[in-house]
Image (cartoon, rainbow, N blue to C red; front, top):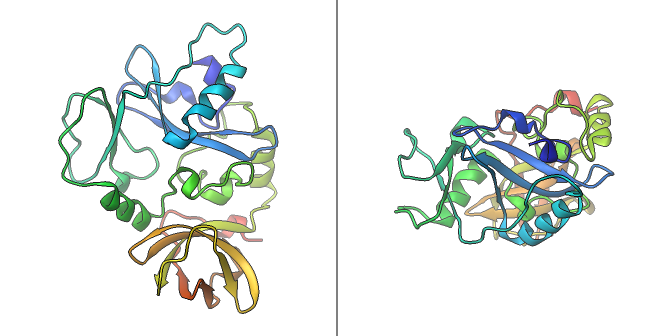
Length: 252
């Protein structure tokens, strides 16, 4: 536990069977490298991480292992599921509520395939409707700052746990009100822009499109453009501030 506690953005001591945490691993300069959910099955910690980030995260964590009596390894045979609805799933798996928002549902880690009635497209629509980021589809390694991506409001940062790598810049960004742009849900009228496409206000670039599906998307936008007419790749984008997002304290 102490090994992770000094490396990630959230408080690992809060993790227990049935209770997960969402956290990020940062550069020393406070820039995003990877995010993941931390579970406990009572004997070990399990990190639910995007497959594209898996190898790099294992390598980075092992660099910091030094003399710590921990083993860090990939368990690619384990399967990750998400579920949402009125009741928690009862399958035999390591299960915890998604700690970001009550409406996000649950996350499950299983060693065998579980029955499913929805796929990745349905999950995409659900999490986009809530404004939740999905790994490197929405967050840019070596570039994204956690407060730009909603980690504060979505319970991805502990402000009381003490030091971790990148903590100084993260705290300074919050307390000095340095956030000038946010990863923002957008309604898309027209063809879905490709990820990475520039978002324009007239002939001025004011943001970048990230993931999207079925007229819903996420885009990194300057906060002073949320009431403007925005376009990207021939589509019109209308920012939609979700109920959980706090802008006033970061807008100045």
